Image (cartoon, rainbow, N blue to C red; front, side, top):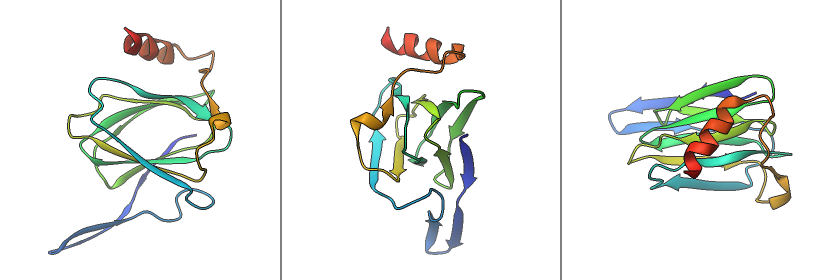
Length: 135
């Protein structure tokens, strides 16, 4: 099940320092970021093994999540927020602001066989987002 964390942040007159540690299991194997998305939705999958941590470093975005039982929507609006997605969390990121930079940290390297693109059958919201994005 997806979980939203408030990352530990140290503030001073020299700026802020936010720490990402002990959030996902294992060792960080992959880091990437998404930006200049326009009005498109990203992701539309879940994983067999990968845990992912999402941090919106700049701007904001929305993350829809479905774990097979429960549906949630998260709004990432601060670099102090970290949304952790477990492997079973089918997710879509959308509603990116023009200045959004979404950092993704994963405990697995890229492996095309780790991706599951079929949404859970009991989610109407997923179907609506996919249809709107493909038009």
